[in-house]
Image (tube, rainbow, N blue to C red; front, side, top):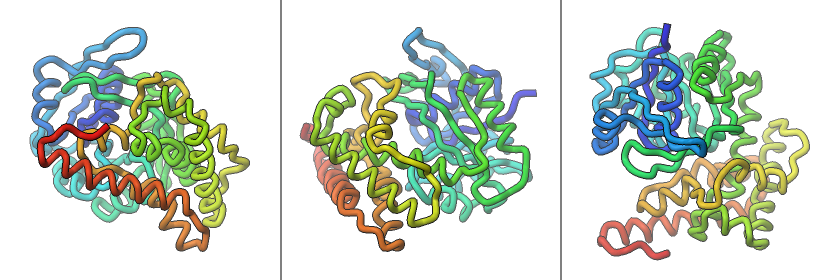
Length: 320
């Protein structure tokens, strides 16, 4: 029997995950605020553009969660700073046994979700799958060789992580269950720390970003700070090589790939910097670990957020 799944968020990643799950035969609803995306999916289908061609799938789509009713799984793929508001507005999706899976980047998202729906519902996940929206209902998907990991963040003893992983696998998403999702969350954070802010600040896609030695050195320093913070917090990451993290961030992605922070800044929208480099800074401060590189990156992105919002509100072309 198909799993009944609501994708809460119709952005790039939500479109990729929802499209793959629909392709795998699950009953998928896309729930988002953008009417142009919802209309495009409902009218023309959701187009997954991959290197080997384009697949059109037909999940159902709506801007009104009450139209959906309760589901088996809610996959939360809104930005980290929108998680609490999105879940509060979509309470009609929650039945007695509904699982809420978080797939955001950064630290602290699971606690935010638990504050809205309760700890017993929350399943944590991190994914290396990527998406880059080309048009409403059309997304470039980076899937192959890019794993997803799910696990229990609060020690709940259940089989739900395996069931969710199986559904993702049927959709072609390489997914496994981790008994130590906390370490997985930190490992993914290192990848985001390495490139997200630097791409946003410079405005560079990966093809240009990876040609600059100064960028590479800064990325290494940011990663090393994050590893020191994780170690101080008792998180076992094993031996971490900053260069390996830097290379992992680009693995399987094209030269014109734009990080999520860069995409947000280009739209004049808020970024998740507070949950990524900012989370390293705050956690490091509490643990007594200095994080000057990450603090600088966070401050620069925050400044760009303000300037890009002013440009967007004035209707002028954004500076490049």
